Image 1: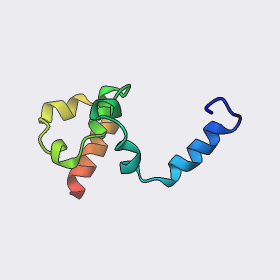
Image 2 (image 1 turned 90 degrees about the horizontal axis):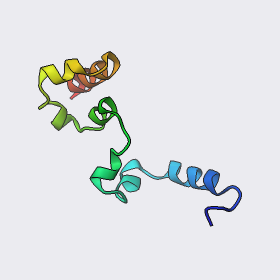
Image 3 (image 1 turned 135 degrees about the vertical axis):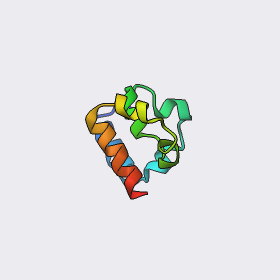
Length: 76
């Protein structure tokens, strides 16, 4: 079925209609972050966990990721 013409486009359209939580529920936690670099793994953490990260760790992230995490912490 995956070899059929248009399969990828159809799946992309279907997945775009689903909430992220529903899509991610089909993957084990370790699979959800597989392939992400360290900075993007940090971005995937919930705010409750971000609050626990040491200041030195936050400063070690790329400036863009650090800024986004600090923005999320301020909002929550």
